[in-house]
Structures are given as structure tokens and as C-alpha cells.
Length: 469
Image (cartoon, rainbow, N blue to C red; front, top):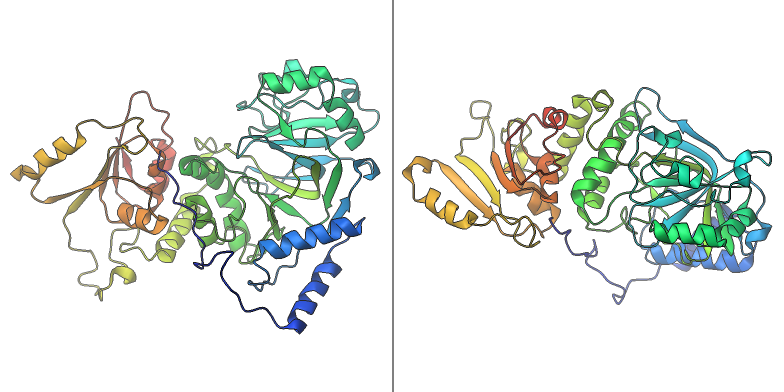
């Protein structure tokens, strides 16, 4: 699997770098806006939250239009009022995968970057409240059909539906009821057996976000899953808000425990993609990392959630038209200044003046090869000997064979490598996510034994205009 590039500060700075402090008047105005935008139950919570927002923004280094969210902080969970949850409500009928919940809370898996629990508050008379396993999430990882109300393989054990593949359902009357359920031996035992220890185990405090928030959930250790599990679901909604809603999204704030700082400065491949395409508008406010995730429950008056992995195999191909995917790729080609357009012609970034007469680039055939050696898994043994032999064979004199030793390079380099090649011969791996930068008509040879290839999906190849072998 291609390793994500090492984290680097986008502006080359660090915590030890000296910054010129903002003028006193500007600081006072900024602080006033923060205080006016937030509603809290305690001065201690106010100081803590403002401090976390200022530190996450680099001490005022970035001036933005989006205001911080409105939050209520309850230092004692028992003082948090009862809620009645609703949802999931389908957002943007006609496409799939985006839902809105009201008055729910979200927990974080102790080790996973993408598995979450969602606490759903029920009416006092709901029979589910007598279920001693109502606060236990189904096992992880979870794969089942049927959406939020589908019957997963563990539904009979816990006595309730499991939720989405990566957002697992829990039920309670209120936070106190959830706490009481969570500490029972039966609930604790089942959570350990299934590897579903969620933080907080019990809530001492509650933060309640009044502003609409989008939950950005993805696998931060794998760029391939980030593309196929998260982005393919989000693209049609991004297209709709970008082109049909005048660039207006129903939320301005984004929360992600998958990788903090994803929308700010992270150099992880998927985060770079999201920022390059303005995935959530031109100035989304990413909430700072929660300072006390093991003791505080984070709740939301309005929470937008994508059904992660729903489109992993493009189960609903009509939901992602080629026109949407083409617009996304055109933006990527432009933002990264790639030498070729989607149709293989020279782009304005190629460094030469391109006339209509010589629009099609005059070039040799280029094949990109990768043995997957850095990971130590699924290594293509003997690839180098094969390439050396081919280079001395006159039959392939018109072909440039480019061997990539390691994809642990910045996304700009990965994109350019894929953009300048006509064919790809590689072992199965996450580096194939860079296929989005290849030109139309590219040919992909993916090597492996009984590999669960997302790239080889015929619907995905139609989106790329490529050929898979």
C-alpha cells in the first residue's frame, strides 16, 4: 500500500517559528466575535473551547469569513437536557448516501480512524429502552445491506438495528441512561468481544453543537479506501451544491476524528484532494480536535452524515454520472497543473505554446511499473529483470518504461507520474487511487491473486474512460 506523505506544514512554519502578533484592536474584535458566537453553561468550558479554537487556527494566522460554531458546554453530563433524535433523513433526493440527523451524539472508536458510534435518543415509551444491549454497537468492521435500518449479522445479539457500515447505532433515553447502560457487565463484555470500545466509555461532560455540522469520515491510513469509500459517495452532493445551489452548502462546519487538520494543512493525499476541489465550500471551518474525548460526549443539533462505503463498488452507478466525475477530474488536472488534459492533449501547464495544428502531444508510449516493494507485501518479484530485458529488446524501442520505487512522495509527484503515463502495470495497492489523474484511454494492468479490486469495477472504468486488464 502506498504510504501517505509525511506530514509537513503547508506554510513551512512550525510551532517554534516567530509570527508577528496581530494588532491589539484586531485581536479584541476577533475575541469579541468568538465570544458572541458561542453559548456556554460554564466559564471554564468557555475558556477551554476558545483556547482550542485559537490554537488550532495558529494564533490568528488565518483570517476567515466562516464564524466559529455555536456550542453549549455542560461540565456535568447529568445537567444535559433530554433530546429526542430524528433521522436519518435523505438529503438531495435523486442521489444517494447523504443523510441528516437531529439531536444525536457521536463516539470515537478507540483505535480505528473511521469507525464511529451514534447515540440516538428515543421517546420515553419506546420498547427499545428496556433492552440491556441498547447502548452496544454492532461488531467492527461491519458490512451489511439495508442502510440504517438494515439487519446486520449482529442485530439479533444486541436486539437493535446496527446502523451504517461505519456509523454504528446505539440507543438511550438520555445521557444518564446511556451512561448507566454502558457500565453494565453485559454491555462491557460484548464491547470487548467485538472490539467495539468507544470513547467516551461514559460521559462526564457534554458539548452540544447548535450549528449544522458535517461528519467527515474516512480511512486515514489508506488512500484507496478514502477515494472509493468516502469521495465517490460525496461527489454528486458536492456537484449539486457547487453548481445548482450557487456554491452554498447546508453546513459551514466540519468535524473529523479521522485526521485532525485535514481541511487546514494536512498533506495526506485525500485531504489534499478535498482542499483542491473545495469539497465543502471555499471556507469550511474544521472543528479543532476534542481535548477530552475519553470523558466528553460530543452532540449535534444538526449532523450531516455520509454513508461511507455505500459506493465502494458503485452499487448505484446512476448516482454518479460521468459528467460529475469529469468535472471533478478537470478541476484536479487544473489545480495540480498536470501536463496533459483528460483527452491526452497538452495542457497550458505543459510549458509550451500549443497550437490547434499540434494539439495532440507528439510523444512516445509511456508505461509506469511498480513492484510494491516498500510495503513488503504483494511484491512483484523479478520485475526489474523483466524491465531490463524489455529495454534491450528492439521490439519495445518506441516504449518508455518508467519504474517507480516508492510512492511515498507528495501528491503533486504522484499525480504527474500517472498523468504522463499511457499504461500502468502494478501489483494491487492503494497507489491505484491516482488513476483519477490518468488521461482518458489509459490501460491498467493490476497484478495479484484473487484481489478485491475496486479499480477493476466496470462502472469505475467507464468514469475514467480507461481499460482494465
